[in-house]
Image (tube, rainbow, N blue to C red; front, side, top):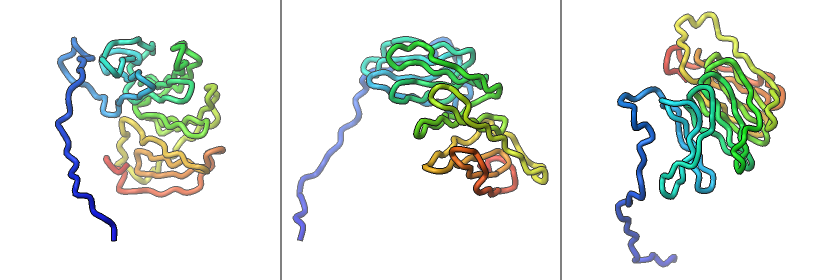
Length: 207
């Protein structure tokens, strides 16, 4: 028989360390539902609805450390790898900066709005655009493949979503979701379709 400990763990209320108003001149909220904070060491990276670029803040005290420039606002969580921080703005431009240097390494224009966080898996980035097109890029910014989803013409009630579903990358495939209710599984290296199913009636929020 296992001995049951009589010790009771108690939890105290969280203590506020700091807070920071990152939109001091803005009175109204705007659509940044997909935005979130990315962390590297003691640095927080995030986009703001009222300005272009990515803000960098010290996680320990909220002090502003810097700003990474983009040509449009970033409305999704930045992506951090071992050597780079990346962001994609709503113009569809992907930017990569050195984590330490904060200098721009490369950028790629996809020419379609992006509201959804990109996926990084085993040296590949996967980016879903609002035009039902998904891209795979290398860590050097080379486009490895482009998958354009063909919407089912019989689903006349289709509603384009503001922000395609975040790709799910696995060892051999990538699972993609589209605004007509389609879920497509494609080969991770070639983007060839492995499996495709439709859900719901093509109306929000099927996916």
